[in-house]
Amino acid sequence: MSSFDYDLFVIGAGSGGVRASRIAAQLGAKVAVAEDRFYGGTCVNIGCIPKKLFVYASHFSEEFEDAARFGWTVGESRFDWPTLVANKNAEIERLNGIYERILKNAGVEIIDGRATVVDAHTVEVAGRQVTAEHILVATGGKPFLPDIRGREHAAISDDMFYLEEFPKRVVVVGGGYIAVEFAGIMKGLGAEVTQLYRGPHFLRGFDDDLRHFLATEMRKKGIDVRFNSTVECIEKRGGEVCAELSDGSEIAADLILYATGRVAKTEGLGLEAVGVELAENGAIKVDEAFRTSVPSIHAIGDVIDRVQLTPVALGEGMWLARHLFGETPAPFDYADIPSAVFSQPALASVGLTEAQAHEWHGEMDVYISEFKALKHTLSGSEERSFMKLIVDKASDRVVGAHMAGPEASEIIQGLAIAIKMGATKAQFDATVGIHPTAAEEFVTMREPVVRARDEAAG
Ligand code: NDP
Image (cartoon, rainbow, N blue to C red):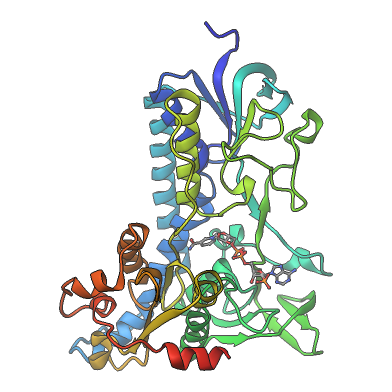
């Protein structure tokens, strides 16, 4: 019989915390979870889910245009921001309820309140101290804003989901997932959008061809994408905000969104006082079993800043619960994690970029297909799609797949299974396509372009 109040005390009911709590409880552990904001965390409330709903909303403007050449007269269209926000809020409330029920049905005790760690086995929450054999910190992350003058006038991604008025002119600062996604959303919903990125090309870490392709497509849609652009300061002038750039120019807007990364949410948890080591960027340091420098305290998800993706937090949470209360699974595998950017067009990738593949494996065959989707042969849209496979010459294994175009995320998710299984290019070629689809391109790419690419790289 344990002498602790709980076997596991989880701080944070986001994706990782909820999954770890539920699985641990199902494995027979006595579990409590403390949450001071909303069930489901960033993903459900101010991230993936409402963002994707906004992406759907923003696509309609193009759909209405595309419809005409298919014979449809759509009539006058008008976008009402408060309607979208209200309907989105109702859906998020429904999901909050589902998350709460998931926990309750699994027998997890939910404690509303902000928890702090008192010692290796004690947590203080809602005015009382409780003990646990294991403590799990799953508090996630929060937007990072650089320290520039006037930053209090900038919006962060959290704000975008609750704006009272739809801004007509938007400046997006940053070149990562969130910046690119919101640039597309706001443009599709009717705003004039300028995106400023400090480096020579945005979406660092993605395949170079994909990054260039997306920038071209975003510009074609009318987004003013500017590279090598740094904001010096922000000023509020009357009803508008103004970004002053390092080249001396200015951009006036109704809203300036800073999407310049996210940092671990560790402040005020009492972690350092009990000896939990943090990395320089504030993330909690953990070993391969998600144990911090205090062995009874564990951490998963965005707060450890390994891979800031919901499915990774879910996987880590599940792994940890099984490790603590069931049978220890094989080490959590971070290889070949697929991811998508819900830009317009969408972009998705799994495996290695061409540059990584050359660096890690040596000689590669690269297959590229760029085309106009069948729908747009009639719609009149100039949007194009892009696909790329990277094949290790020695083993014939497909080590990377990249796509920009409609349904890229859905297509790459399927390919991720093949790549995770170590599929070869010959096996891709032996797979029969589904016609007519964009996805069939991935099984019909016959001629490598590797010489041209090597020359381009060289
Ligand atoms: P990212 O880390 O993806 O991108 C941050 C961007 O901000 C980079 O372009 C970075 O530039 C730039 N930046 C950083 N510091 C500064 C600065 N001081 N001044 C100007 N620019 C700066 O962060 P996001 O906020 O977009 O997203 C956080 C994470 O959330 C993502 O990494 C992703 O893991 C996750 N996410 C996933 C989504 C999905 O799966 N679809 C959607 C949204 C978020 P540089 O490259 O030069 O460092």
